[in-house]
Amino acid sequence: MTASLALAATGAVLIAAGVYLFMERSLMRILAGLLSLSNGVSMLFLVSAGTPGGASFVADGSDSSTITDPLPQAMVLTAIVISLATNIFLLALSYRSFQLDGHDEVADDVEDAIVRRRAEADLTSATFDDTEAGIDHDTDLDEAAVEAAAAEAAAKEQKGSGE
Image 1: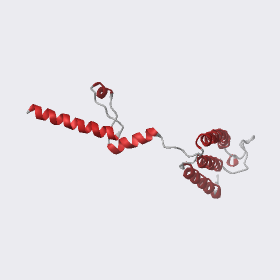
Image 2: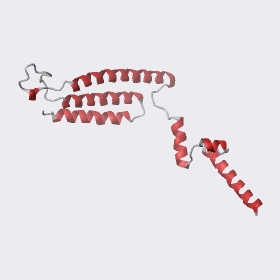
Image 3: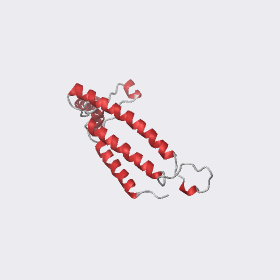
Image 4: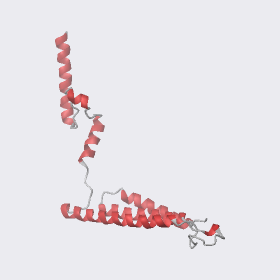
């Protein structure tokens, strides 16, 4: 089984371009990246199928070295259908985003911003036992700073009253 190096390199370039475009914030670039990525993967599947032009099945079984594997061809057909459906959904999502906002940029997720702020402040979320005890780990940094200052003041008062 000899694979075409040019087809494999073309598939790798399509996958690399697809991954690069998939990381962009514009939905149209994400769509182009998904198209490129799916075409590159399909091309690599077909390259892995074997020598092009060979029969999938040999009736008399005389020469089994020229048989082409039919499974990658079936997988590519399935991948084309899935890719088409995903691209149509992403195109509709992009159109709706453009209708609502006037652009197709992907906005920052509020929950991601909370997780990022919590990681920067090294805060953790409250467990069930903490909430029963009245301990609340807040996600807002300003409120967390106020809570920390109040906890320090309460600790100082307890030290002062205990002496």
